[in-house]
Amino acid sequence: MTVHGTLNLAVTLQIAMNRQRTNDDPRIALLKELADPLRLRVVDRLGHRGPATVSRLAAELGVPLPQLSNHLRRLREAGLVTVERSGRQAVYALTDPGLEALLPLLDRITGRIAEPAPDAADIPSRTCYDHLGGRIGVGLYRALLDRDALRDRPDGMVDLGPAAPATFAALGVDVAAIDPGRQRLAFECLDATERAPHLAGALGDALAAALVDRGWVEREPEGRVIHLTRRGETGLRGLRATATSAG
Image 1 (spheres, rainbow, N blue to C red):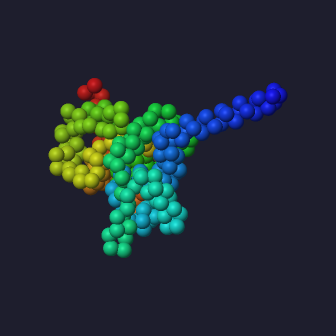
Image 2 (cartoon, rainbow, N blue to C red):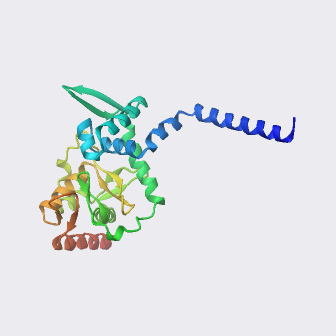
Image 3 (spheres, rainbow, N blue to C red):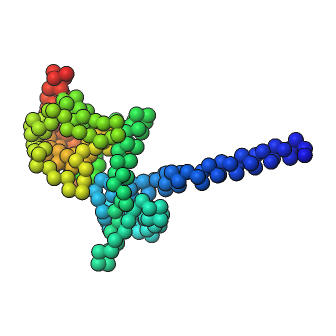
């Protein structure tokens, strides 16, 4: 056999071996399904807010129904989502609660290596689902960690700290009264512009609602843009100062 023929045979064997390794590892197929941006957004939405109809998912994600239906089929065939009929509506949900743990972990890892968006300073803060995002959400979460009201975990989940009851009560949230239901209580959510975590879960939703009621945060009439009011700036400075003195 010529040298050229030998090299061709070696390359062919290597390709076959690589394919065999890929086929032997079922994680590769699962991660490929999650690597698509829209499918990842669907899993993220179902993890944050729970089951939803196709029409609701399409409206919230801003995608055409035919396009979404194709991606839901892929997720269903991969065993990542289930579908149940409720009258004439198809309701989708995550198959395994483990997926709810996967996304905070992925956010946690990404947040360690990602740089903020180049124009992050010029982008106004926004709500992320029903919790606070952007500079407001990230800054508030950091202050709560520094205050020891919250404690972050390596897997992206968030525990209540010793100062949680008093700190959240001062912000208008009764931690003991929160019923997460199908949500998780608290976990990290990677901010799309700051590329740093903010607080998500039932606790994050309750905190956002309380700060709007208190006049710390204002929502623009249309859309998701939020602003920190003068009262909110003062309150956040006080929270940070308390955290500094406590440390």
